[in-house]
Length: 322
Image (cartoon, rainbow, N blue to C red; front, side, top):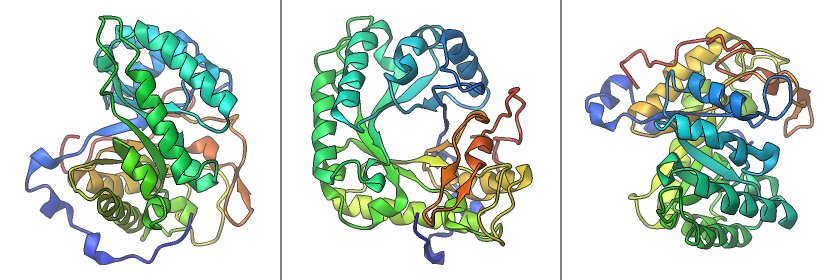
Protein backbone atom coordinates (compact mmCIF):
# COMPACT_ATOMS: atom_id res chain seq x y z
CA UNK A 1 0.00 0.00 0.00
CA UNK A 2 1.31 3.40 -0.87
CA UNK A 3 2.64 5.91 1.63
CA UNK A 4 0.72 9.08 2.37
CA UNK A 5 1.92 12.41 3.71
CA UNK A 6 -0.07 13.36 6.78
CA UNK A 7 -2.52 16.19 6.31
CA UNK A 8 -3.47 17.55 9.71
CA UNK A 9 -6.79 18.93 8.52
CA UNK A 10 -8.36 15.57 9.34
CA UNK A 11 -6.74 15.08 12.73
CA UNK A 12 -9.47 16.07 15.16
CA UNK A 13 -8.90 15.70 18.89
CA UNK A 14 -10.87 13.19 20.89
CA UNK A 15 -12.22 15.89 23.18
CA UNK A 16 -13.75 17.69 20.21
CA UNK A 17 -15.09 14.53 18.59
CA UNK A 18 -16.80 13.27 21.73
CA UNK A 19 -18.84 16.38 22.44
CA UNK A 20 -21.77 14.49 20.91
CA UNK A 21 -21.80 10.88 22.14
CA UNK A 22 -24.54 10.04 19.64
CA UNK A 23 -21.87 10.08 16.92
CA UNK A 24 -19.86 7.21 18.39
CA UNK A 25 -19.18 4.50 15.81
CA UNK A 26 -19.49 0.75 16.32
CA UNK A 27 -16.58 -1.63 16.75
CA UNK A 28 -16.66 -4.92 14.83
CA UNK A 29 -14.04 -7.59 14.24
CA UNK A 30 -12.77 -9.78 11.39
CA UNK A 31 -12.95 -13.54 11.96
CA UNK A 32 -11.08 -16.08 9.83
CA UNK A 33 -12.79 -19.26 8.62
CA UNK A 34 -9.91 -21.34 9.96
CA UNK A 35 -8.85 -21.78 13.57
CA UNK A 36 -5.45 -21.53 15.24
CA UNK A 37 -4.55 -25.05 14.04
CA UNK A 38 -5.12 -24.03 10.42
CA UNK A 39 -8.15 -26.29 10.08
CA UNK A 40 -11.56 -25.00 9.06
CA UNK A 41 -13.82 -23.83 11.85
CA UNK A 42 -16.63 -26.29 12.56
CA UNK A 43 -19.92 -25.25 14.15
CA UNK A 44 -18.53 -25.50 17.68
CA UNK A 45 -15.54 -23.35 16.77
CA UNK A 46 -17.81 -20.71 15.22
CA UNK A 47 -19.95 -20.72 18.38
CA UNK A 48 -16.85 -20.15 20.49
CA UNK A 49 -15.62 -17.39 18.17
CA UNK A 50 -18.96 -15.56 18.35
CA UNK A 51 -18.98 -15.92 22.13
CA UNK A 52 -15.49 -14.40 22.40
CA UNK A 53 -16.34 -11.60 19.97
CA UNK A 54 -19.54 -10.78 21.85
CA UNK A 55 -17.42 -9.64 24.82
CA UNK A 56 -16.92 -6.33 22.97
CA UNK A 57 -19.09 -6.32 19.82
CA UNK A 58 -22.24 -7.54 18.10
CA UNK A 59 -20.63 -7.45 14.65
CA UNK A 60 -18.20 -9.81 12.95
CA UNK A 61 -16.85 -9.71 9.40
CA UNK A 62 -15.97 -12.75 7.30
CA UNK A 63 -14.41 -13.30 3.87
CA UNK A 64 -16.02 -16.13 1.86
CA UNK A 65 -19.22 -18.08 2.43
CA UNK A 66 -18.18 -21.29 0.65
CA UNK A 67 -14.56 -21.57 1.80
CA UNK A 68 -14.28 -23.95 4.76
CA UNK A 69 -18.10 -24.34 4.49
CA UNK A 70 -18.21 -21.06 6.41
CA UNK A 71 -21.88 -20.20 5.95
CA UNK A 72 -23.03 -23.77 6.51
CA UNK A 73 -21.01 -24.11 9.71
CA UNK A 74 -21.90 -20.73 11.21
CA UNK A 75 -25.67 -21.32 10.94
CA UNK A 76 -26.10 -22.97 14.39
CA UNK A 77 -23.99 -20.26 16.05
CA UNK A 78 -26.03 -17.45 14.50
CA UNK A 79 -29.31 -19.12 15.40
CA UNK A 80 -28.13 -19.42 19.03
CA UNK A 81 -26.47 -15.99 19.28
CA UNK A 82 -29.28 -13.84 17.90
CA UNK A 83 -27.57 -10.56 18.89
CA UNK A 84 -24.67 -11.14 16.51
CA UNK A 85 -24.69 -9.70 13.00
CA UNK A 86 -22.31 -10.69 10.21
CA UNK A 87 -20.75 -8.76 7.37
CA UNK A 88 -20.45 -11.74 5.03
CA UNK A 89 -17.82 -11.85 2.32
CA UNK A 90 -18.29 -13.25 -1.17
CA UNK A 91 -15.04 -14.21 -2.91
CA UNK A 92 -14.77 -13.48 -6.61
CA UNK A 93 -11.29 -14.60 -7.64
CA UNK A 94 -12.61 -16.75 -10.52
CA UNK A 95 -16.00 -17.79 -11.90
CA UNK A 96 -15.90 -21.27 -10.35
CA UNK A 97 -15.27 -19.77 -6.93
CA UNK A 98 -17.92 -17.12 -7.46
CA UNK A 99 -20.43 -19.81 -8.44
CA UNK A 100 -19.62 -21.75 -5.26
CA UNK A 101 -20.23 -18.59 -3.23
CA UNK A 102 -23.61 -18.05 -4.88
CA UNK A 103 -24.55 -21.69 -4.28
CA UNK A 104 -23.69 -21.33 -0.58
CA UNK A 105 -25.83 -18.21 -0.25
CA UNK A 106 -28.78 -19.91 -1.98
CA UNK A 107 -28.44 -23.08 0.10
CA UNK A 108 -27.80 -21.76 3.60
CA UNK A 109 -29.23 -18.25 3.90
CA UNK A 110 -32.73 -19.80 4.22
CA UNK A 111 -31.54 -21.44 7.47
CA UNK A 112 -30.91 -18.17 9.35
CA UNK A 113 -32.67 -14.89 9.99
CA UNK A 114 -32.25 -11.93 7.66
CA UNK A 115 -31.59 -9.91 10.83
CA UNK A 116 -28.30 -11.79 11.26
CA UNK A 117 -26.86 -10.26 8.08
CA UNK A 118 -25.38 -6.77 8.38
CA UNK A 119 -24.43 -6.79 4.69
CA UNK A 120 -22.64 -8.78 2.01
CA UNK A 121 -19.28 -7.66 0.63
CA UNK A 122 -18.35 -8.80 -2.86
CA UNK A 123 -14.58 -9.06 -3.00
CA UNK A 124 -11.91 -8.15 -0.50
CA UNK A 125 -9.24 -5.90 -2.06
CA UNK A 126 -10.18 -7.27 -5.49
CA UNK A 127 -9.31 -3.92 -7.10
CA UNK A 128 -6.03 -3.61 -5.20
CA UNK A 129 -4.92 -7.05 -6.37
CA UNK A 130 -6.21 -6.50 -9.90
CA UNK A 131 -8.59 -9.48 -9.74
CA UNK A 132 -11.38 -7.42 -11.29
CA UNK A 133 -11.86 -4.17 -13.15
CA UNK A 134 -14.20 -1.64 -11.48
CA UNK A 135 -16.80 -2.45 -14.12
CA UNK A 136 -16.54 -6.20 -13.52
CA UNK A 137 -16.81 -5.73 -9.76
CA UNK A 138 -19.89 -3.53 -10.25
CA UNK A 139 -21.45 -6.32 -12.33
CA UNK A 140 -20.82 -8.93 -9.63
CA UNK A 141 -22.27 -6.64 -6.95
CA UNK A 142 -25.43 -6.31 -9.06
CA UNK A 143 -25.50 -10.08 -9.59
CA UNK A 144 -25.49 -10.74 -5.83
CA UNK A 145 -28.26 -8.17 -5.31
CA UNK A 146 -30.37 -9.99 -7.88
CA UNK A 147 -29.62 -13.37 -6.31
CA UNK A 148 -30.70 -12.19 -2.85
CA UNK A 149 -34.08 -11.07 -4.16
CA UNK A 150 -34.91 -14.75 -4.84
CA UNK A 151 -33.93 -16.01 -1.35
CA UNK A 152 -36.04 -15.98 1.81
CA UNK A 153 -34.87 -16.45 5.39
CA UNK A 154 -36.03 -19.03 7.93
CA UNK A 155 -39.06 -16.86 8.77
CA UNK A 156 -40.07 -16.33 5.15
CA UNK A 157 -38.62 -12.82 4.81
CA UNK A 158 -37.02 -11.90 1.50
CA UNK A 159 -33.31 -11.06 1.50
CA UNK A 160 -34.07 -8.37 -1.06
CA UNK A 161 -32.83 -5.06 0.31
CA UNK A 162 -29.89 -6.51 2.23
CA UNK A 163 -26.97 -4.16 1.60
CA UNK A 164 -24.37 -5.37 -0.90
CA UNK A 165 -21.04 -3.56 -1.11
CA UNK A 166 -17.32 -4.14 -1.34
CA UNK A 167 -14.06 -3.74 0.59
CA UNK A 168 -10.74 -2.37 -0.62
CA UNK A 169 -7.59 -0.55 0.37
CA UNK A 170 -7.91 3.16 1.19
CA UNK A 171 -5.61 4.23 -1.67
CA UNK A 172 -7.77 2.39 -4.21
CA UNK A 173 -10.70 4.62 -3.29
CA UNK A 174 -8.54 7.74 -3.33
CA UNK A 175 -7.04 7.21 -6.81
CA UNK A 176 -10.24 8.23 -8.62
CA UNK A 177 -10.45 5.31 -11.07
CA UNK A 178 -13.03 3.09 -9.37
CA UNK A 179 -16.29 5.06 -9.58
CA UNK A 180 -18.24 2.20 -11.29
CA UNK A 181 -17.77 -0.03 -8.24
CA UNK A 182 -18.70 2.78 -5.87
CA UNK A 183 -21.82 3.59 -7.87
CA UNK A 184 -22.97 -0.06 -7.82
CA UNK A 185 -22.35 -0.57 -4.09
CA UNK A 186 -24.77 0.01 -1.21
CA UNK A 187 -21.77 0.59 1.05
CA UNK A 188 -17.98 0.75 0.92
CA UNK A 189 -15.46 -0.52 3.44
CA UNK A 190 -11.97 0.96 3.63
CA UNK A 191 -8.89 -1.04 4.68
CA UNK A 192 -5.97 0.90 6.18
CA UNK A 193 -2.89 -0.51 7.93
CA UNK A 194 -0.15 1.86 9.14
CA UNK A 195 2.15 -1.16 9.48
CA UNK A 196 2.16 -1.77 5.72
CA UNK A 197 3.12 1.86 5.18
CA UNK A 198 6.10 1.48 7.51
CA UNK A 199 4.82 4.14 9.89
CA UNK A 200 6.58 4.98 13.14
CA UNK A 201 4.85 4.65 16.48
CA UNK A 202 4.44 8.44 16.67
CA UNK A 203 2.87 8.62 13.21
CA UNK A 204 0.77 5.45 12.95
CA UNK A 205 -2.48 6.81 14.39
CA UNK A 206 -2.26 10.06 12.41
CA UNK A 207 -1.66 8.03 9.25
CA UNK A 208 -4.66 5.78 9.93
CA UNK A 209 -7.09 8.65 10.50
CA UNK A 210 -5.81 10.63 7.55
CA UNK A 211 -5.93 7.70 5.13
CA UNK A 212 -9.48 6.81 6.11
CA UNK A 213 -10.66 10.41 5.85
CA UNK A 214 -9.09 10.79 2.42
CA UNK A 215 -10.96 7.68 1.29
CA UNK A 216 -14.26 8.88 2.81
CA UNK A 217 -14.00 12.17 0.95
CA UNK A 218 -13.17 10.51 -2.37
CA UNK A 219 -15.96 7.95 -2.04
CA UNK A 220 -18.54 10.61 -1.18
CA UNK A 221 -17.48 12.66 -4.20
CA UNK A 222 -17.72 9.64 -6.52
CA UNK A 223 -21.12 8.69 -5.08
CA UNK A 224 -22.34 12.28 -5.22
CA UNK A 225 -23.61 12.30 -1.65
CA UNK A 226 -22.41 12.18 1.94
CA UNK A 227 -25.50 10.12 2.87
CA UNK A 228 -23.75 6.83 2.13
CA UNK A 229 -22.47 4.15 4.51
CA UNK A 230 -18.68 4.03 4.67
CA UNK A 231 -16.80 2.10 7.35
CA UNK A 232 -13.36 0.65 8.01
CA UNK A 233 -13.16 -2.97 6.89
CA UNK A 234 -9.76 -3.84 8.35
CA UNK A 235 -7.20 -2.10 10.52
CA UNK A 236 -5.04 -2.81 13.53
CA UNK A 237 -1.44 -3.60 14.38
CA UNK A 238 0.54 -6.84 14.81
CA UNK A 239 1.85 -7.75 18.24
CA UNK A 240 4.82 -9.88 17.12
CA UNK A 241 6.78 -11.19 14.17
CA UNK A 242 9.49 -9.72 11.94
CA UNK A 243 9.70 -5.97 11.34
CA UNK A 244 10.02 -4.88 7.72
CA UNK A 245 12.20 -1.82 8.19
CA UNK A 246 14.05 -0.02 10.96
CA UNK A 247 12.10 2.73 12.66
CA UNK A 248 8.76 1.04 12.05
CA UNK A 249 6.31 0.98 14.94
CA UNK A 250 7.35 -1.83 17.30
CA UNK A 251 5.56 -5.17 16.97
CA UNK A 252 4.32 -5.24 20.55
CA UNK A 253 1.06 -5.48 22.45
CA UNK A 254 1.60 -1.98 23.85
CA UNK A 255 1.94 -0.53 20.36
CA UNK A 256 -1.20 -2.29 19.11
CA UNK A 257 -3.04 -0.94 22.14
CA UNK A 258 -1.75 2.56 21.39
CA UNK A 259 -3.02 2.36 17.80
CA UNK A 260 -6.38 1.24 19.10
CA UNK A 261 -6.70 4.03 21.66
CA UNK A 262 -5.21 6.84 19.57
CA UNK A 263 -6.27 5.86 16.04
CA UNK A 264 -9.22 3.47 16.05
CA UNK A 265 -10.93 5.20 18.95
CA UNK A 266 -10.56 8.53 17.15
CA UNK A 267 -12.35 7.08 14.11
CA UNK A 268 -15.06 5.63 16.34
CA UNK A 269 -15.44 9.00 18.04
CA UNK A 270 -15.86 10.58 14.63
CA UNK A 271 -18.83 8.27 14.04
CA UNK A 272 -17.08 5.81 11.72
CA UNK A 273 -17.68 2.11 12.29
CA UNK A 274 -14.44 0.12 12.46
CA UNK A 275 -13.85 -3.62 12.01
CA UNK A 276 -10.57 -4.41 13.71
CA UNK A 277 -8.28 -7.11 12.31
CA UNK A 278 -8.57 -9.75 13.72
CA UNK A 279 -10.17 -11.97 16.39
CA UNK A 280 -7.37 -14.43 17.14
CA UNK A 281 -3.74 -15.12 16.22
CA UNK A 282 -3.23 -17.49 13.28
CA UNK A 283 0.12 -19.28 13.83
CA UNK A 284 -0.22 -21.39 10.66
CA UNK A 285 -0.96 -18.48 8.32
CA UNK A 286 1.43 -18.11 5.34
CA UNK A 287 4.11 -15.44 5.34
CA UNK A 288 2.96 -12.03 4.11
CA UNK A 289 4.70 -10.25 1.25
CA UNK A 290 5.04 -6.47 1.25
CA UNK A 291 4.95 -4.30 -1.86
CA UNK A 292 8.76 -4.27 -1.97
CA UNK A 293 8.89 -8.08 -2.05
CA UNK A 294 10.05 -8.59 1.54
CA UNK A 295 8.35 -11.24 3.68
CA UNK A 296 7.22 -11.27 7.28
CA UNK A 297 5.33 -13.53 9.65
CA UNK A 298 3.35 -10.63 11.14
CA UNK A 299 0.04 -11.96 9.76
CA UNK A 300 0.29 -14.67 12.40
CA UNK A 301 0.25 -12.14 15.26
CA UNK A 302 -2.63 -9.77 14.48
CA UNK A 303 -5.26 -11.20 16.83
CA UNK A 304 -6.74 -9.23 19.69
CA UNK A 305 -6.87 -12.65 21.36
CA UNK A 306 -3.90 -15.02 21.50
CA UNK A 307 -4.25 -18.68 20.54
CA UNK A 308 -5.77 -19.50 23.94
CA UNK A 309 -8.32 -16.69 23.73
CA UNK A 310 -6.53 -14.47 26.21
CA UNK A 311 -7.35 -10.85 25.37
CA UNK A 312 -4.09 -8.98 24.69
CA UNK A 313 -5.31 -5.43 25.35
CA UNK A 314 -8.46 -3.51 26.21
CA UNK A 315 -10.97 -2.87 23.44
CA UNK A 316 -12.74 -0.16 25.40
CA UNK A 317 -11.82 3.37 24.34
CA UNK A 318 -10.39 5.36 27.21
CA UNK A 319 -12.80 8.24 26.54
CA UNK A 320 -15.82 6.02 27.23
CA UNK A 321 -17.82 3.04 26.07
CA UNK A 322 -17.96 1.88 22.45
